[in-house]
Length: 272
Image (cartoon, rainbow, N blue to C red; front, side):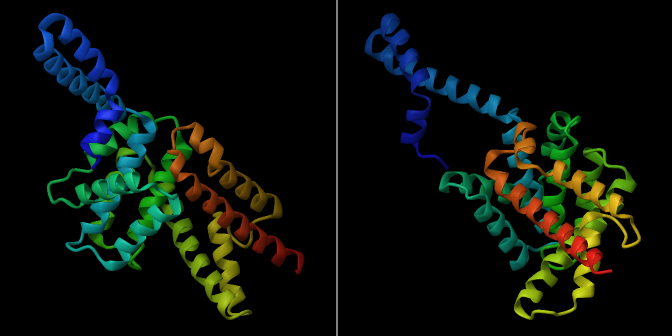
């Protein structure tokens, strides 16, 4: 949590204005009382406004839901904790922002936490921001897959996410398929770097899955799918639509992965 000194500095305007008003109306005692009231009013108003800030809503919901998913089946695994840490590291969060993310993750783990508390306001501001909704859900699916599989309890939490954000069953099916392919593509790519030439057929199949197309798709269809995914995950577009700036690195990594899959498919097709 932010120190008292840090809070006094952040909300000093309310402190000063309230203190001056108090000084004029009640002397030194009024100065102290007015300063305290001004500080509390500014801090309360700032937090209220922050709660409805699209970027802050996205950030809080991301880590709260991640925490709920991690605890869904009774215990939080080391892989799930490691995934959350990796996300924070990849985002390049400051220590203060990292503590905030950890607080949200911890809040989500609480047995009494209701994910609809963060999903309802998020759904309202993302109603017409499909690319931002997509990024949010992709992060949660990666979190659910962190320990290798999606349990029934995690699936129930994900279903709440899909329902609140109004994803159709068809969209969910395609998304789940793409995310599993991405996980496999990432793993096989790493193995391929460690052991060159290892199972290139599997890597190519994963690449098609990342793009969401079948190997029988035409070149035009493959290119169309690639363009759509690159547009949906473009960092600048996502930030403009409400994704927190400290999550831009996640968007960059996503576009790099999509590009790598497309390059793999193009290279294979040239050799046919």
